[in-house]
Amino acid sequence: MAELVRRQHLDADVGYHALGFQESDDGDLPVPFPDDFEQGVFLNSFPGRLDIYSAGHTHTASVDAEVWDGQPPPQDPAGWDEQGEADFESTSGEVAVWSMSLGRADDVITLADSGGSWRVRVSCTGRAEAAALSEGEGIGGGVEKYLVQFWPAKP
Image 1 (tube, rainbow, N blue to C red):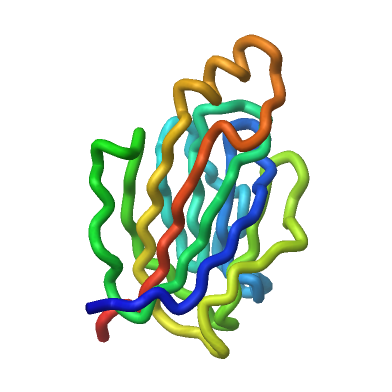
Image 2 (image 1 turned 180 degrees about the vertical axis):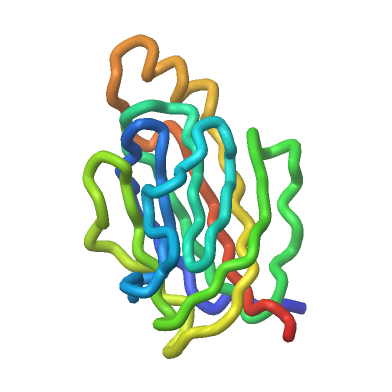
């Protein structure tokens, strides 16, 4: 059974419905964030990069990032508005958090001491509330919540 290695919480700035997770050492990425960001696609992957389409235009999302030593138990889909899985390649073992409006955040997610191949599952709740907030007051905080789970990909 897989075990949780590390968990961290961060507040991620969302701008223009966009939130990104990108290899921290991003100098050689063929498509750096936000190039080719696709509106309306919940989870989209590129080499060394994951794009998330948020239901809210401009807000601060609550993100819990987990690193597991194997595939974590499945999340009950009934508890989430959206879920998706993708592959992720890291050369540094660190993932930077990006916003379309503010660029790279100071926070990084530490996967390992060095690079490797990972699977990632992204689950989200609070999408309707985030969309309604964007239509009304504008900016909100912590309404849209993400659980981002990384685990080593099998060779």
